Length: 125
View 1 (cartoon, one colour):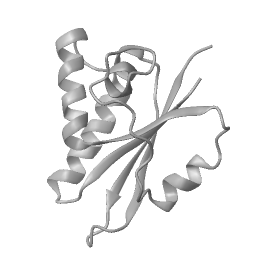
View 2 (spheres, one colour):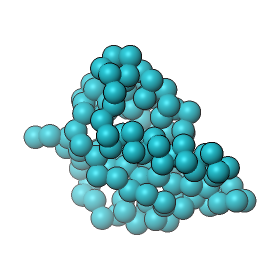
View 3 (cartoon, helix red, strand yellow):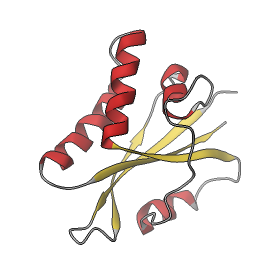
């Protein structure tokens, strides 16, 4: 059975105390990338799973509630951490898959405009 990742970009409100769901992604399978992101099906991880953020936004929480209890390895990454995953993947394997580049590009777009993004994700296997 394969392992799938479900990924969501949240952005912080101007006051910095509320997170909003801005994008969700269907992601292909790339176990080398999953390993770098959190050690799932590969590794070693750059960032071991840290669970869901304490201040997770209501949009991502609502998404989470639609999933079965078998989901696992919940985590989140800042844009700086996503950049490190991108760079390490490139060193090891070449260009990351398009879906990852799309997420990273969206996060960079928010950041360039002064909006703090983070990537919240989990796996289903």
